[in-house]
Amino acid sequence: MTKKQRAIEVIERLKKEYPMAECSLDYDQPWKLLVEVRLAAQCTDARVNEVVKELYAKYPTIEALAYAPVEDIEAIVKPCGLGKSKSKDISACMKILHEEYNDVVPDNLDELLKLPGVGRKSANLIVGDIYGKPAIVTDTHCIRITNRIGLVDNIKDPKKVEMALWKIIPPEEGNDLCHRLVYHGRAVCTARTKPYCDKCCLNEICKKNGVK
Image (cartoon, rainbow, N blue to C red; front, side, top):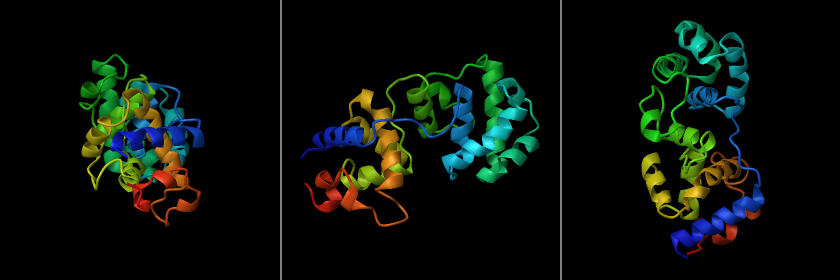
């Protein structure tokens, strides 16, 4: 089985297992996803969803958040961890969005990557979820599972994993696949416990189980 053949099979099996492919961060405007994905670094999406309720209640617009005292932002987002650096990035990012982009979140990777605190993972999430463009979000679940099942070979660097996956995954499937890998990584192909291979829909095609 080639990597491309395995990728297509993985996509189809995960579609059946997880019909809904959605980001687990709660947002109703593009800029909020930008804020939340920064807060989600080394923090659970569930906690982020709770913390931002207070943040948006106090600062409901890009402009309001852009000119909020950084220490006020930090006090609210502190439960997400790394409060000092995250609050500084959020403040700087919102200022740029307001002053240079007229409150519109850019729709391409190059522009997004210029924003403070925005890396390739965040930029791809925005491009894919907000603008419906081809995207591959290489978070920890994606990196772990694609290595285990044999879509990539012992690659841990997020950008290198992304580039390897672009070669074997149809562009229109990348974004949804990555969301499904998150679901699968949380429920079955776990990191902190032994993976539940006995109930895995990918068991028969997984390289970890000796399938070539």
